[in-house]
Image (cartoon, rainbow, N blue to C red; front, top):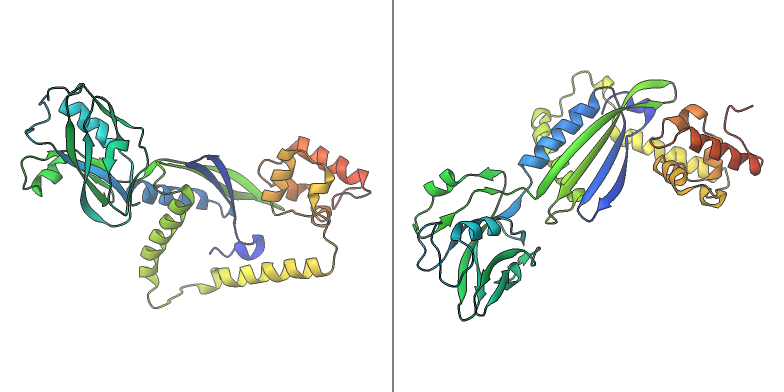
Length: 325
């Protein structure tokens, strides 16, 4: 890590759950410029290299092209193919496998009508496939494949021997969207630091937290190629993350041993102010009284209103911030 972390400590990561499959991660403080460096690198990996499972083709007896219509089936083969393209499947093993959708009575045909073997789970069973008239049956073989990146129909055609398979292009990534923002951050008197906010939305096959971990490991595997012999040019300017973490642990341990620990929850602060302090690793009244106004102002989400609230709450207990008169 950058040598600056020996002074500001290891970057902290806080997590905000926006919905079941969408989360925001806040990382900071970071050296100037590192917000874009990390944010852009992680985003590119997340959108291009996370493994997922998609439909790459279907096969229906008697159907040779996507413009075919079947008696009793309300939708064209093209519409059915496009609907099945939205199928969300969790598959343990890599490679190709066939699953079967079968409906033997009239009504709405959904993904819940798909029969899956062990190790395969349909995550959106309510997805509409087609509608079937009374007295008719509908059966389709669905080819699913676990892979990474994007594969177009042209590429699928090159490797397909069965002319009866209707092909569909596939974007395998379970990541729907990734966006990041870089804001200014400060630590004490340092005002030229970065704070990286990255929001990830997935289709549910992989959680945003797992996407972050996978992407980090993917990047690390490439960067390790450049340090095969543990070569360090200008090593004195690289912070040893293990040493910084150990030093922080010892400092926290020493502080807790020589002071009482009174949780800040008892101060009756508003949820917004309390969450900001907790995300800033300020968990006790004793820690709070050792903070300066500058340190509190560097915490994301901690504004003037929160500062006034904290000062009033401390004053009511006979305390004050470090540096206050």
